[in-house]
Length: 351
Image 1 (spheres, rainbow, N blue to C red):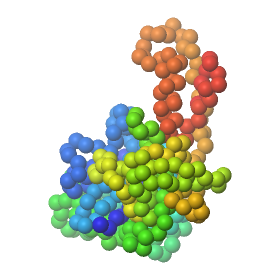
Image 2: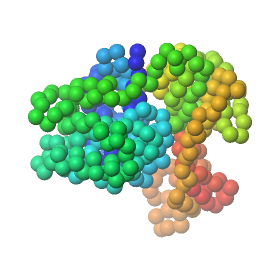
Image 3: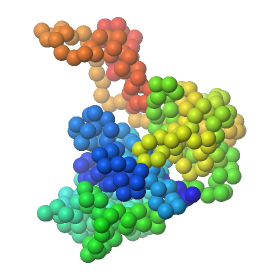
Image 4: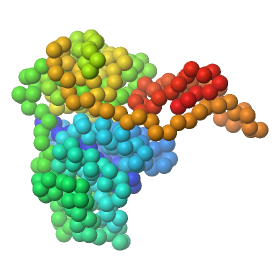
């Protein structure tokens, strides 16, 4: 089975999560009402905060999709994801055109040599002007120093809420087939027999957590095949350490599915790699070369958690003791690599 790896990037509220949800439904891997925005805050604010993994199946091809944050505050999530995929769908609102976060995510994509597919979304808006939006996108590409090949981007027109895509504005369409066809045509295959025959090398670009399995590494397998029970070496610039793969999962829709092995080109969840960090190289040979390191931005905001001395102390909230706050922050540290917490003070936590 061929594999394509893509990310969906956009300015906040330009419809990328809605478009992804429609892709999941139309390919039969998710039901109506299931959404990539699964966190309470994400649903409440209608924004994506953490990068999400999903996959759809179209013909004989598996398409791994990563829905990235569209808000500037979560830019480091975007950058890590872009290192693990082979192309991006740049979603742009047909009425608003490119916006500030469009510039940020597109600049990162172009710097990494990715060739975006542009999706002009919400073409049904009363004030939509797809031609103007497409022209503005081209101007932005040129302004950001895109190569001739990158600037010659394919365009798909869409109404994400209705689950419709078109190759040309005058076309009639009832589903997202034109978008899926564009992905197969323009995104290079991530898998090949030659890559699968090489020694294993894979790299985590995100982290997850399971109450039973502990920290999980979300990895892109670049070469070789990883198997359950296999001994691997976790390598970084400071040295290497041995570990054993306890469990492996791939994605079907939004669900993780346990599997005995994962081959080159795929995206997977790996359990058993204690203290794994983003950007490390995982190999089955101690002498394997390191993959290019992924850097994680340092925190830009500092907070102190202090004892509540207001007149309303103890009158609201359920989990408000220092022990409960500490437990919650420790759980967050398992997956949030951009967070630093200093627990050295008993009176205050520095975050």
